[in-house]
Picture (cartoon, rainbow, N blue to C red):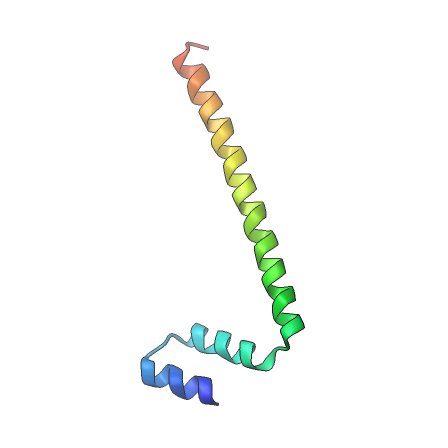
Length: 67
């Protein structure tokens, strides 16, 4: 396959080669769906991280206030 040949020539990791193969074989709608799913998961992780940061900040503030 063309992507594999390019990947070998550029010494690209096999995971990137697999990604290129997936992109070549998927239709546009499937790619949009995959991107949407990955974006949704990223947003969930970002929200969870922000929530944990707020909790930690409150706990540190309480601790520094002597509570």
